[in-house]
Image (cartoon, rainbow, N blue to C red; front, side, top):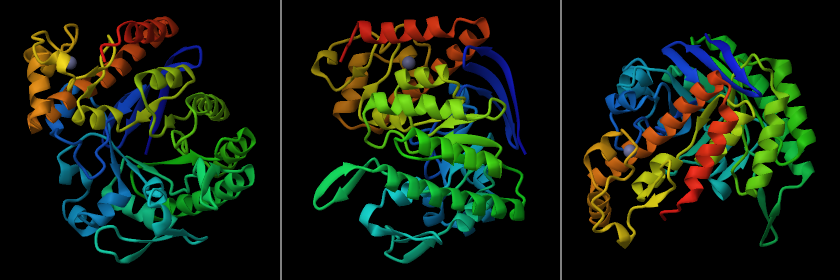
Length: 381
Ligand SMILES: [Zn+2]
């Protein structure tokens, strides 16, 4: 079940409304990452108050821990985590791929040793869809193979060849078909998204998009980016892949990236994003602001009584000084991770809010230019 209306366009950038089983999502939208269920350090009401409309969970991690019977006993991931809004689940393809030498890819699926207890496990396209069905995801992702950018060969790393990217993409297409069939068989109330692969090769990306369109999905994601390639390559493949996808369906750029990357991608017509950057960096004391990034551990903030960002209305900037945040970071206090996460997610979600308004006003390009200029003008470091 899914509805998607593009309500305004400004060049390729568009503002829309996504209707899902557990609610509506205004796009462009950023999805905070809650790999194991929670978005680290935050409760569902925190996410709501920051303006999050959809969060991301991970099928692979939840399958291993706490295991499906536990989530099933709650009737799904929404009641288990207390987040009642829409949830997108990643299929686990990328996580299995990240296991490196510990996994073996075959036609049937991926065999690997559980990092929890060493058990031999097999994750297939069908199993991944059944897991996401049990989680009751609003958007399930197909199980695919993420083509690595670097391949280890003879003790050296080299970029994947076009042949390797093509073989991997074709395997992902065969798995996409199996995911579609299993999804139709279990008949959940969620939506199913395909994922464009094909490495750094435009012809492979085109073939992947055509193959997925032939099978038919509710939305289309661009995968296999931000895996070690140069930034310019990532952006050019992203733009090229976005242009291959139908305008009527939502487009999702997986696992990317910085505020600048998100603005570039919105300008290319992307509607959905997820990335660990705002939450992971928050815990390391790296804060994103409209006036540039702040690394709060830096000694220069020890006596700085000003707010982190005087123009930010988030709960952190409202009440706490840079000096206090610096102190919390230095003593490794959990509250520091939480306050930093609240601010970073507010910034990312507010950036999406402002992008949506600018698209509706026909001023997105100007808004994006101003944001990037303001962020690079003062590198507070
Ligand atoms: Zn703030």
